[in-house]
Image (cartoon, rainbow, N blue to C red):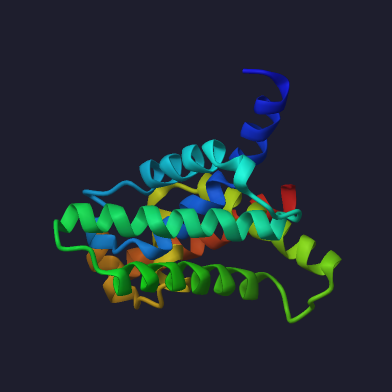
Length: 187
């Protein structure tokens, strides 16, 4: 691998945690035992690397949008392959829209409505930092936070999904938020 390819890999790899978070947000938790978000993200990054010469964007935001489109297609295909149903273009489109909505919710969680290019770049960097920090949390804390803050699940639903009491789920969320704040301050 030459230096240019190595730079391309490093650039794309910077989005790994962000894409994994989006994959987790948009993959039905009941399917996670059968479909691993990391596998879908790996396939997405491989396809992005192979098609990088076709990417026409210039900004990190455009790159993130392009990667989200590839991720949406891969999620739709993985779910379709798992369910072995006939291809439903409407379902594929709805997954792409769900990923865009998840990305928007993530961005909204981080910023207000500033839209200047420098503010967009800062928001993009914050989204990547948040995804990296979430990735560093223990699995149960990360899962509980994602289910509550991005999926809107109740403590009872989270507890049932994780095989814990609602009180234990609340503890996971509390500890996860505390650790997330620490990680974000350290960066």
